[in-house]
Image (cartoon, rainbow, N blue to C red; front, side, top):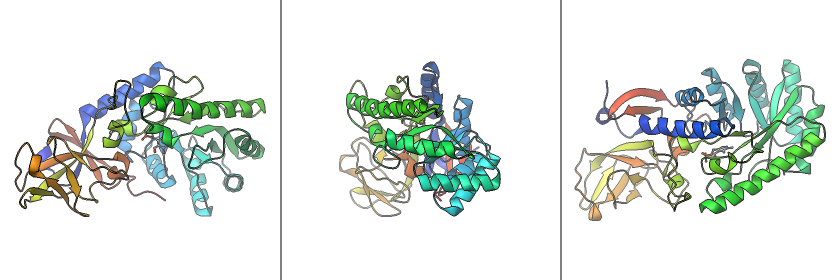
Length: 364
Ligand SMILES: Cc1ncc(COP(=O)(O)O)c(C=O)c1O
C-alpha cells in the first residue's frame, strides 16, 4: 500500500473523510426536504465520485459536455443531464446515440432550430429524446416567461422529443455575497422559473421538473417548494473561492470541508524563497487569488510559470528545504481537477484508492 508521502508530485489528493462528510451532508439536507439530488459531474469528471454520490441517494449526474456524459454513460452512471446545448450535426448524432443506449439522459435546449434538428435526428434513429429548456440568467438559455413558453410549444409539436422540465441555473447567484444577498438573488431567479413552469402547464404542456442550484445556493433552493431537484457540484471538494462566499454567521462559508488538495515538492531553495513544482499546470483558476498552503499560515504563494510556484518565506513559521512536501487548497476546484489523470483518495495518510478522472479533457 502506498502512503501520502510516496506519491510523485504534483498530485491531486482527496481526503476521504472530508469528502464523505460533504456528500453525506448534502444528501441528507436534500433528502429531508424532499428534493431530488443530481450533482454536477463537471466538478469531478470521475465515475467513482459519481457512483459514491449515487450510493448516497443521487438520482443521477449532470455533465457540462456531451463527451463528459458519454464517459459517465460508459461507466454505467444513470440519470444524466447535459446542462449545455448540443449544437451541430456531429454532436446531435452523438446525442441521439447516447439517448439510445441511456434513454433516461436529458439534454438542455434553448433554440428552436436546434430543437428541430434534434427531433429530426431522433426520428431517423427511431428514439425519443428527453429535453429540458435552459432558462437565461446571464449566460445561456431562453428568457423565462413567454419566450420559454414559445419554445415549449414547439417541442410539444415534435413527436420524438419529450419536455421534462426547466434547467434553471443562475451561476452568478452561486457566488453572490453576503449570505442574505445570495438568498435574494436565487429566490428571485427561481421565482421566474416557477412562473414559467406554471405558464407552460397552463398551456396544457407537461413540465414536471425544475432543476438548478449550486453549492452556494442549495440552502435557499432546497427550501423553495417550486424546485424539484438540485444540481450542486463543488461541495464534494470545495476550494478557496467557495470558502469566501460567506455563511449565515460571517464571511467564511463553512457548510462543507476542504477535501481536495494538490501536493507539491520544494525543488529549489533560493535565498528567502522556496520554489515548488506546482504552477499553472498544477492549479488552474479564473480567480484573482493564489493557492493556499495548508499548514504554512501567513505564507503567500506566487505564480512562477507553468511548472513552478514561489513561496516567500519572510513570514514563514518554519524553514523549508529541498525535498519538503507542501499541500495547497486550490483556488477553484473544477478546472484544477481537469488537469490531472487521477485522484489519490486518502484515508489519513494511506492511499485507499486511485480514481481515474476519466472525463478529464472531455470537452467536445
Ligand atoms: C449548469 C450548472 N449547474 C450546477 C453547477 C454547480 O455549481 P457549483 O459547483 O457552484 O455547486 C454548475 C457549475 O458551474 C453549472 O454550470
